[in-house]
Amino acid sequence: VRTRVAIVGAGPAGLLLSHLLAGSGIESIVIDQRSREEIETTIRAGILEQGTVEVLASSGASDRVLTAAHRHEGIELRFAGDGHRIDFAALVDRAVYLYPQHEALKDLITARLAAGQDLRFGVTAQRVEGAETDRPAVIATDADGQALTIEAEFVVGADGSRSVARAAVSGSRNGYFREYPFAWFGILCEAPPSAEELIYSNSPDGFALISQRSDTVQRMYFQCDPEVDPDSFSQEQLWDELQKRVPGTTLKEGPIFQRDVLRFRSFVAHELLKGRVALIGDAAHTVPPTGAKGMNLAVADVLVLEKALRALLLEDDHRLLEAFPETALHRIWKAQHFSWWMTSMLHVAPEASDFDRLRQLGELRSVVESEAGRRFLAEAYTGWPLEGLQ
Ligand code: DHB
Image (cartoon, rainbow, N blue to C red; front, side, top):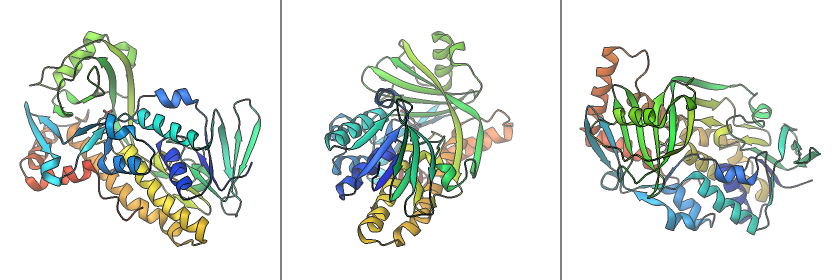
């Protein structure tokens, strides 16, 4: 088959890109190896920057985000037994929105299918060919095991951290890379919220994040060993682990009905563009989850690339595409820094010395006791401006 833009991956990046391209009259095909059901039910991120919400709403990708998302005007940083509120509204006049990623995906899939998008689930990309020709192609296998070749004017790899498309751009393992000696143990439980806003807690026993999903379902995480078996904890042990990491707060407990371990890595591909193939979202970069930048960064990539593809495909103007890597990387490295900083400031490294622990408390105090410190955090957390990228 032929199309103008072949997009590998029906996550937030791929689906939003196809949606915005359609708005500019540019047709695309989106493939994903997962089923629609898997995409719509896998629990992922939860926090959207204000700018992300504005893009989803104003582009018609999601109406529900305006009514169903919960606006949060601050977070709490908790350490040494005390909570310190970072008041986003007062500091930067912005907010974030709690809206699970899979809800945004449901909205995007509904909108794309209603618009007649060629969106194919269960189709596995094998490789991308012809990056440096005018006819790049995705070589894939469909749900029935039949070979499928999608020829396009441009191919986009939006296929996540284990990207297949990356090999055509950057080589499969080529990137700037950092691993962390810990992971997050995530749970979903049936309980009322333990707090009105998110709590990011540093404690001698390690980090915990108290987040929410709804009035009756809560999401919480605690720092753990990356090799831990999620089934090795009883429910009681999980509550003990969580509770001891948020001293000063009493968690509202309830049945835990889902558990998972999230690995931490920081990654940026060496190349984001080769000829007529580009990488966006987790295919281009991965951030550790602390600070909730992953999906928001993917949305920013989409805005930059969509503008460049409009110029290329509607006006045969290559300049914005040539600038795409530099423009995208500017924000990517800021987000890498923020995610690394929040991670290193809040977690307890297994090899941390007493000096490291006390220095870390000094760092946390430097942030919360200074308006400049709180504002730096608030600006990054609520999202740097997207104006100019679109
Ligand atoms: C959630 C995840 C994050 O990484 C974060 O920083 C905040 C919230 C969440 O899943 O709710």
